[in-house]
Image (tube, rainbow, N blue to C red; front, side):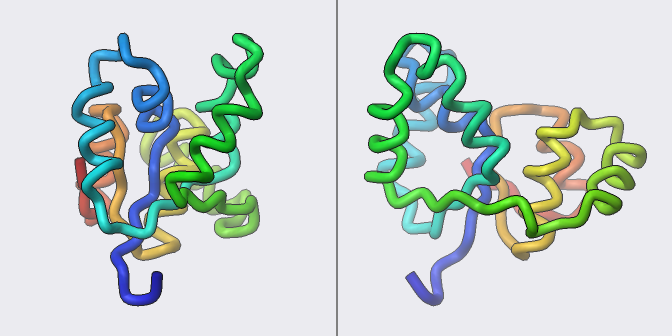
Length: 131
């Protein structure tokens, strides 16, 4: 996967992909099917995306489906707690969104989200949006 553009996924991308009734499902499914980017998701965001699947007793199945898409889980050491706290204070975003934004910034990656507030903060930070 060397040389590919990295895209950090927000939890809402996987949530929409796994729920055919989600308003963003068709757009997200098309994005995931057609992208050539190296897709990555912070561990916290992956956990957030899996909550409904775990509740429905489909957690392991959903995790395998996500892995089959080649989406890589990012560990928790990409950014520091102080960086996250500073970003939270500066943007007013919720902490999970700060993790996604900070991960994209630290990875010099694009960002995929359906969240307008996160997208606006990413644009303001000079992070390219995709989707």
